[in-house]
Image 1 (spheres, rainbow, N blue to C red):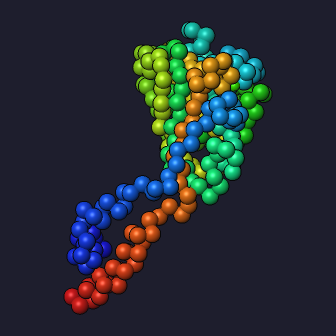
Image 2: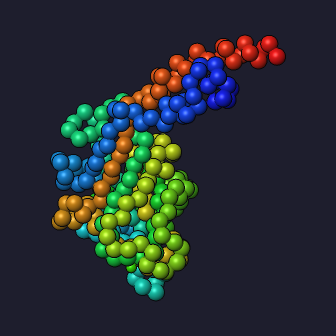
Image 3: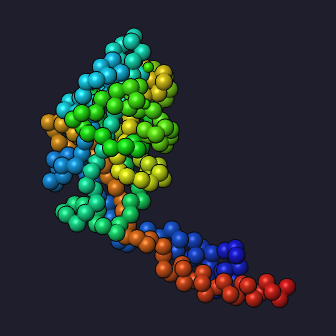
Length: 245
Ligand SMILES: [Ca+2]
Ligand SMILES: [Ca+2]
Ligand SMILES: [Ca+2]
Ligand SMILES: [Ca+2]
């Protein structure tokens, strides 16, 4: 059934029908999660260093994403960022029964650089023990048992300072397509991304410069009952018209 038929049968305009399908539910809500802010303590993050493959950096105050660190070594650094305990019935948490429909990650960059490739991590990790060698002795491997394929990138696969210093907001809604447990994100340099990007971690002293997760969530089921009733009412009529042809 196309929209024109439905409009003829129900007497409503196509414009009106389109409007119904794009209404944002009135009960959509925005939630934010930042370590130490409004009582939230579920953030975790760490840098993984190819040059120091067994060293944990979970307590460091910054994270670098770089395809060449130390300079001229060719070694990579990668990042892990997770936000636990986002669902629940506590203050500021997403109520149980809600579904996340979009999410952004905000980072505060203090050293500009090439770019970042984002993956979702598939297994649990501990901020205080995780290292480069925790991921098969070669760091986080995209599209493997360790991580999803890359779902979003920022910047470019070159050595230019593509990502400036300042507030960096990344739409990470692409991570939602994979489902599964919440094991956080992996942040990887491009292969030729030799200009490192440095940003503040969840341990940085200034709270509002720490990584920030912003989520829009709605109660489930999210389908519009009005649109459903219209479609159910119209379908037998369309079927009848077709039979008379
Ligand atoms: Ca950390
Ligand atoms: Ca490299
Ligand atoms: Ca690996
Ligand atoms: Ca840099």
